[in-house]
Image 1 (cartoon, rainbow, N blue to C red):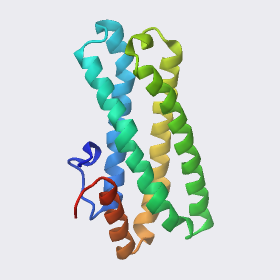
Image 2: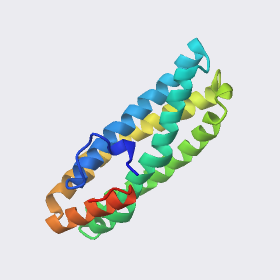
Image 3: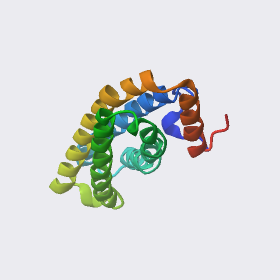
Length: 173
């Protein structure tokens, strides 16, 4: 099964480029999520709102989960042993993954009954916190982790990372 998050992105021969491209796709879905409330306020729960909800739910329950697994199961263990600085960065990123997952669970519960999100200030607050948190998280990860990883991973480690990411998505290489 192909993962829509990786469609049109670099292939798994350059897994760090795939992770960077994933960041862009996640940010696009944050934008969609943030536009949802004003859209619903103006148009109600129409076909566009239902489509946006479906795309956002898919992204954050499938594609973003794969992205987090790519790091937690494959990239972090390699990098964690390299230096204390990387271990500190990874510790922070893992903590943020947990916080974002908790926020997403709250948002997802509301998205399952879209009529309840209209005029729901708590939902709007959660969305703002989630999207803001994701933007900060991804910027930090790109700046602090992926740049370092690009310089210290061996070709073999890059190939193994790409293989693991492809397997996770059911992509044959």
